[in-house]
Length: 329
Image (cartoon, helix red, strand yellow):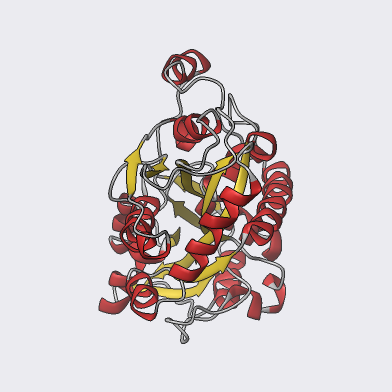
């Protein structure tokens, strides 16, 4: 799931960031005898951590056996870990594995210490997982068009839950409101699991959540997964429609990506070595199946493709935030 962290004030974040590494050390070649550390800016057990550990286990085969380890540096909605990598030695030994939370923070001016475009460079996109849209099985809606009609027929009565304020799920709900021209009320939770639990209990029967949290309850029939908030269906869930298939949501795509980044000053040849290793690793059929079993679509992109995705996200989230008055404090 997308981890939701308590957002600290500026003083707390400044103190937390005071221990990051000093100015970058420039290097033209990576020392293959030293391990590569993948920094995950969220707690162990979440989506980014899972993806990072799968990579760490499989990347060495394409790096001449070079060791890859995972280091969790959680806090400040991913900002502490991102700041650490932005200031690390640019020698290819410190990378960041993060998700769309980073572009949301940047779009809302909540990075507090680093610049996504200037201080970090994309290496590769690994997987993606769109936001899932679901309802309690007692709700009559069988698809997103019927859900929009239900909300219109019940003005002021429809609420939707998400994993927290400013999360991709929140933005998906806001995008639904904008596209359908409805006004569902946002009910943010401190995490995806409690939001889904209240969906199962019918306290807040409309949900925008992660697929891993929602899918098990959809299988038992307690929840109905109406769609994924993306432009296309998932290869491993072909029976679940994409929201973009419904005309009024044709431009809606809130897909959460997970990607690798490096300090901006890392030399191109060092980046290319890691980029090529990641792309080669993601071609492995067993690894792809392992990720799909965890509800992640292998969605490999090189550095250039990842950079375009970041630019697209920054523009989209900034526009949605302005339209829906979403702020982070």
